[in-house]
Length: 193
Image (cartoon, rainbow, N blue to C red; front, side, top):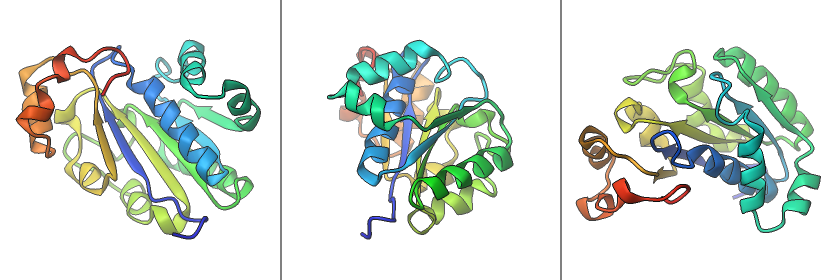
């Protein structure tokens, strides 16, 4: 794959406090380092990724925090649910990032045109064309029953963090996880998947 292409749509699912936001920052940093690009973080709720402790913990988890802090001078965080705002900022970052950008969406259901049952434009086109548009995605959800099928169908990786309700485990099974894979999910520790 040419270096200008990013073929990643990661979906992190887990209950609040399971470590999925920290993992999402780590995923974004890994992709950004690999592809030498900037990161745009959408946190419409303003509670998860915008929290400085989440950034501190994510950097502490990384192998070389000083190198990471030096490289990540361009992390953009916005708290709007409007796709137009996310993609406008991502386009600016993409141009500065050599034609590539990583977009983190903390809490998918807070975005316009994304619901538990569907994902609309412009999200669907951007995800489907991610390699050619130079966009990597990391999506965060609290509940697998709220994961749009078209999003999970286009995912290159789905990570399950701690889930505690039987409905969550049934929904995760519909995403393709086996009973054996789901057996330990309710007892996973913070950051484990």
